[in-house]
Image 1 (tube, rainbow, N blue to C red):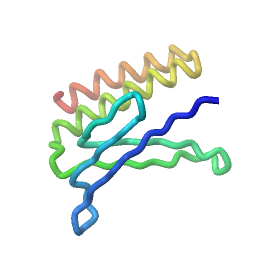
Image 2 (image 1 turned 60 degrees about the vertical axis):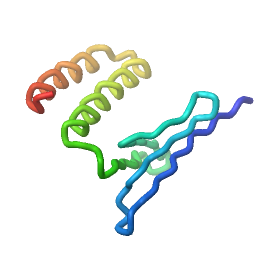
Image 3 (image 1 turned 60 degrees about the horizontal axis):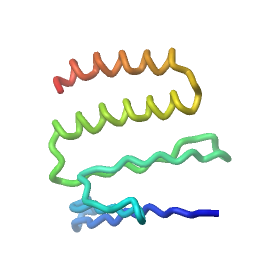
Length: 104
């Protein structure tokens, strides 16, 4: 059995606001990020647990792009997992409208 590990190292200020976010994924590389969004499915509670962090340097325009792209990539994952292209296309159409509304 093969294993993989992804780690996040978060440096915070005295108010526990993220200042620096670093990630590492074994052979897949490492880097610095302004934001992360992690979703974990809790089977027992049938609930999604979330970790959403962004640093002080992330601009509102970057957050808009991050939010928009996150929805699109989740849609791609949903479509691959369910083969429900009808719903996925509906979400993509929504994302086009959202992009205009957010002016990105």
